[in-house]
Image 1 (cartoon, rainbow, N blue to C red):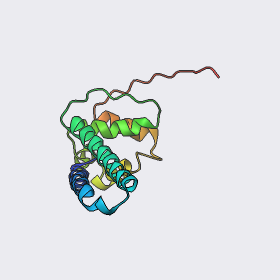
Image 2 (image 1 turned 30 degrees about the vertical axis):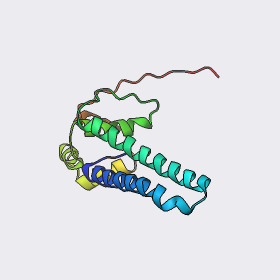
Image 3 (image 1 turned 90 degrees about the horizontal axis):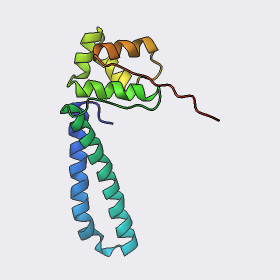
Image 4 (image 1 turned 45 degrees about the vertical axis):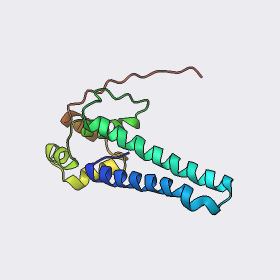
Length: 142
């Protein structure tokens, strides 16, 4: 998951390199067995597709095209808070300022997906982002 503009720029550059590698794969792979060449090409395409998916998700969030984020577990709330920050077009520094925390602390929280953070801190982040969390607890049959 891309969480900031720096990661976005790096991921875009990586995607461009994969595109170039794909273009060169056929040319340089002529000496390889067709199955090896095909596997190599499919691997490059798969990685490029993953990068493009991450880029598209970040752009969609950043451009304000997401207003609702559905989570299916308590653990997913952390990712939703990161996505909400991006959707607000706030930097990690701006969120830190609103919480009276250094930017580096927000970076640590997000890099670990808020692992080990108290529920109260998660609520503070949600409040700062003006995010309403609506939980539905389903008791499933065994």
